[in-house]
Amino acid sequence: MSVAQASSPTVERVLQLQRTVGNAAVGRWLARAPVTDIEVPSAVNHVHGGVLQDDHALAHIRHAGVPFVRGAGEDASGVDANDIRQGSIGDCFFLSPLMATARINPGKIAHMVRGPIGESSGNSVYEVKLYNDAGELVTHHIDDRFISTAAGNPRYAQYGDISALGPELWVMLMEKAWAAQRGGFNNMDFGMASDGLKAVTGKSSNWHNVAAESTDQIIANISQAVSDGKPVVCNTPGTITGPALAWAAAAGISLVSGHSYNVASANATARTIDVANPHGRNHLPGLAVGDFRRIFEWYGILSASVR
Amino acid sequence: MRLELHETGQSQVEGTWVSAANIWEREPIGHDGPSGLHAQITVEEEAPVDVAEGEELEFAGARWRVVEITEDPEHRRGGVILERIQA
Image (cartoon, rainbow over all chains, first blue to last red; front, side, top):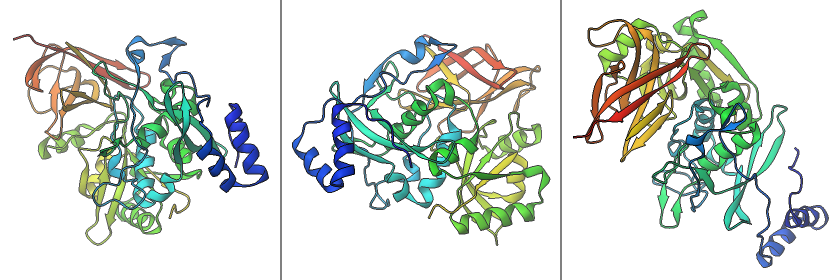
């Protein structure tokens, strides 16, 4: 495991205490010391060709809230797959792996966000951990300013639950941390879901071409993965076939091409798969495996359980 | 007022969620019309509406005209620009 470089006297002091006398001493020291000098990325922006895009630079607005809110039916961590709602950027390839993992082990995700650990220029700062390409945990200091619409709403990932203390921010914080890790939001506008799975879990994934497998193989593989606690992400092709679109239109279903969905559950007996959409709506529940085969091009199964 | 919908993402207009998807040159789905660059607009959980430039649709208590549909042929990502029609 690697840790981000110390970025302020406070962080240096925390790391020194961790090394010499342990985390309990860090907690005691933090309780006494005002932590107001944590360095954060000045602005995790959306750039294109090195030029800041005006529409995406409308405002970095502070969204004061809390990392987790325990909503109805959620476990003690407050993390729930239903907290995830993609916004106006093509980062389904990160949010779908996050959704799939949060559904299986919400506590694992909760341990990746901590704080607020202090302040920076009056904004609350959180510690967010993600895995890099080598499978090592990287720590990011992320403040609670987020690229927002002219109306002041989050532009990208949305609030989770709402509490009396403010909105739930864990999804927005993890999305911003990944933007920081990838060098900006422009580098997470479309990408590989295998990268998203790696960032969230640190593990590699095995990808299956749907057209190369029978429906028996598909339902067996996905049912086994669900049983084993392995996240499954499924991608539609860049161009959904005419028959599939016509089928969806007749059924009143919204399908999105070039989009990463994820598997919520599978029933090997009924041969159906519940597919979730990181939009937080327009899910595909009870999809017959034949229809799954008609819609999706690839599905990826994490190489290890996240339980 | 203009609204830019980024393909595969979703945007909120006065509390209503709208998304754009399936943007490429094709025949319209669900109605007759000439082949061309089409997109599907989904409002909340309603069935998607297939549109071309110049067509109109209604959501969030207003009528909207499809001003522009764009598609990057290399990366297959695009977007739709809508303009609210003044009453």
